Image (cartoon, rainbow, N blue to C red; front, top):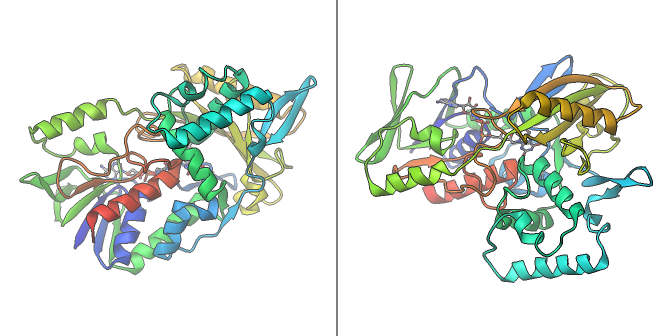
Length: 415
Ligand SMILES: Cc1cc2nc3c(=O)[nH]c(=O)nc-3n(C[C@H](O)[C@H](O)[C@H](O)COP(=O)(O)OP(=O)(O)OC[C@H]3O[C@@H](n4cnc5c(N)ncnc54)[C@H](O)[C@@H]3O)c2cc1C
């Protein structure tokens, strides 16, 4: 079998590595001069900034991504964050930090009881309709819980708690219990991309950079190849890593009812947008490798300092600190200003330099399909599949969702 992969991001590379491992031929086409998409290091003044991700694997070395990397023989060391996370809360006119798993401690005992009841109930009474906020707020009208839910969803999904479906957030929480907290890959995001590239090239895989796929060719409702730079390349299946809507722009639309229904469903899929602010500092600003959640900040949802695990991600003796915030309005400049103001307040009295501010939206978003909005890896075109963060598996945060989607796709291919 020969598979053609459109896009050399993490989703495309993971799928290619799985197929190569099973003895199939794979050709990857990437429009940029480099592979890895939103998951590679960007060297800036010796700091390893990135094209997207915050150098964090949501479930560390125990989650779906780590398992898949081991399965395909990609050699990556993911070090668990310790602690998992802390939450910054007001205390006596200043701020204090509590461990992430003690998040319910500021609630009254009655609200704690109600939260336990809700959690138990939703385990057995499914499905749960509405947003995550709709799930708890009618019963527990505590502003603390809203702020925390928004900080968590903002950091992990770049969405507010009233935008993520309750079912998806509950599945994510269940996975946090199952797999555990985050971890940092030694060498950052690029370590994972480089390891996958090695696996692919050591088997029957080839990678073409600077090769945009212009068309996906179909015959009788099935994918048969791609067109790139005037060349026609034929294959037994096409795997696209660029999302459902973007992929649908590349082939002739069949006029079937199934296809029209598919396109209507895609209209409701929204990408998630965010801003990342990268800071460099002479000393640690956070001092650990977990996430600092900031529910009381105006915009910033959370911050990490990966150099506490891997000092090589910054020049010798320095620290790399990255904050993330979901975008809440169209006024990007004021969103950035509010984020920078938050950081000034959070790190008051500490020395740091702002290295870079990066905005992710439209064609280069945080997630192509916001969490819980669309999970299918199939399309109305036979032998055309979608992987990547446009089709994440249920309950999978970020790259964990990508790995779950790839696992599902490989199962569907039945190869
Ligand atoms: C600010 C930010 C912070 C994040 N933090 C984290 C984090 O800490 N942990 C985490 O797990 N996830 C994080 N993520 C999410 C994660 O980075 C993405 O979900 C993941 O990298 C997406 O991979 P992908 O393969 O789906 O898509 P992409 O990386 O976008 O790859 C798709 C590739 O397809 C190429 N392409 C597009 N069109 C064509 C075409 N026609 N022909 C050929 N090639 C084409 C693109 O150039 C691109 O390289 C973050 C994302 C952002 C933006």
